[in-house]
Amino acid sequence: MEEKKDNTVEPTAAKPPTNGKAIAALVLGIASLVFLFIFLFISPILGIIGIVIGSQARRETAAAPETGRTMATAGFVCSIVGTALSVLFVIIAVIIGAAIVGSLAGGL
Image (cartoon, rainbow, N blue to C red; front, side, top):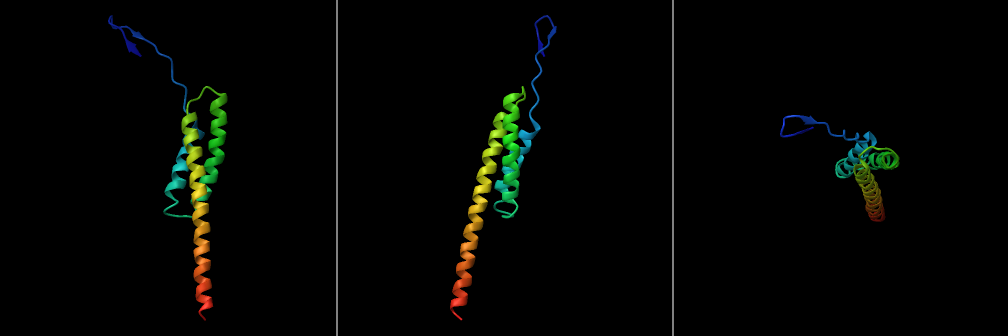
């Protein structure tokens, strides 16, 4: 509401609501990146859920007068990065583990 010089108030248009799935996608995307360094096996689960919800939110915000498309895109991208990095770290951990077990078994 804007106040004029004669102390009358002029109504302004209401802002459209933010899509809830966009917020959830952003939270899940950030959580997948944080859990990447804390609990490696939880990160891809959060990332996959974030990818699904983020794509739904992007579709919904394109078709409806809701805000949050940028937030949905950021969550979608963070989820993809978190999932990809966690899968990469798991592959590296398995390779290193196999090399250690192989070197221990070869020495016997």
